[in-house]
Image 1: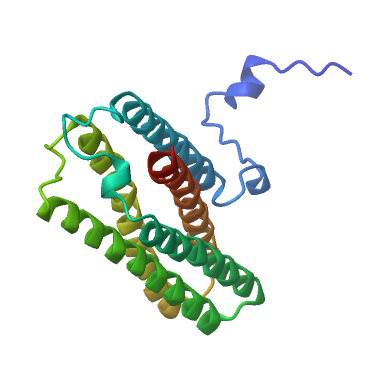
Image 2: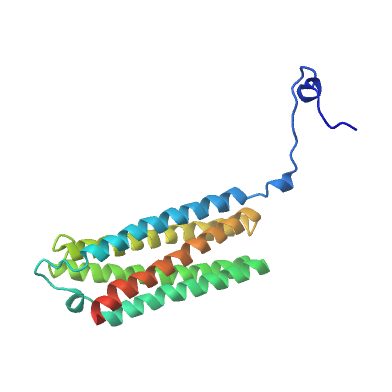
Length: 212
């Protein structure tokens, strides 16, 4: 039997033809996850450029102090632990999401937020001390690169905390529906991404700067 279609069959004899695609061919939220992965890749490029700039400018002290004189490694190590703990508690929140427990998810998200706020607080304390001692971004190329890289990461953490707070409210209002689960998954990728970036910052900027 011939499988070729005539012009009349394709056009419906002059009448409009509507094609009904199976909804399973386009899973709900698939485009959201793809778009978010693309966003994370663009963020990777931004941080790659910032790391490259730090690599070029990181030894331009301009006659001022360097990492060994400026950075308090124990304080930075404590701050790193805060961010890593926040990643752990977010992972617990995702596990409790699978059980469908709204209250437990909210609890672990709040704990994650508290760790994130502690991280930002310590970072602001470090920045304010440096600036108060005359070691602001305009002091040297090294400090300009440092403040830009670390400050950009801190800005991302701030955005993540705003997003997290919004999700806590949304979950309390609308429960753990498919849309909120997808939002939690996107924020999970974002939050763990910031952890990975910070490990790079801690290693390259702080550890190598102080111990190198």
